[in-house]
Length: 144
Image 1 (cartoon, one colour):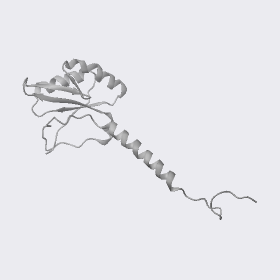
Image 2 (tube, rainbow, N blue to C red):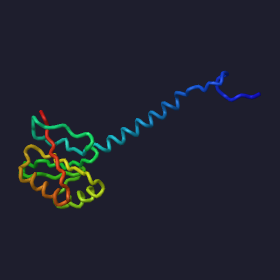
Image 3 (cartoon, rainbow, N blue to C red):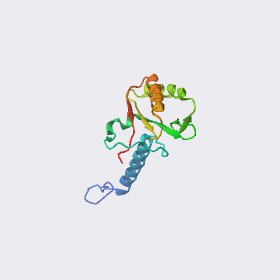
Image 4 (cartoon, rainbow, N blue to C red):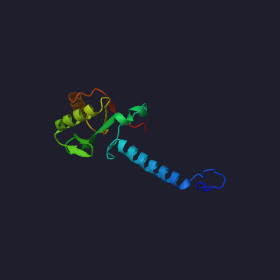
């Protein structure tokens, strides 16, 4: 009688090569997903220092969107950067924020303002975020 493939005793052999392939595909998948969820931060911004700054809430990380405010020394004003795009006309971001709010009801805006940005500029961006219907606002700071 003809028997099935594999070992002579009927025990199936564990194939390690396909398992490694599957693990590598999963690794690439999770690396791509993780990098997509990272906040779009501006490395040129020097965050204000707060020794009592709290760490980010891990469960809210996927619901956060960064609004970056650079400092322009020449004009003594803030420069609004959202998703790597500079906005000269700040009210243009209101529809973008509203659309993001429609996609995610738990959306939290993280304002990353340079330490040198005047407080009036922070207030301006807070008003725009409020006009977009978003009440959950957090401020980024450094603890060192």
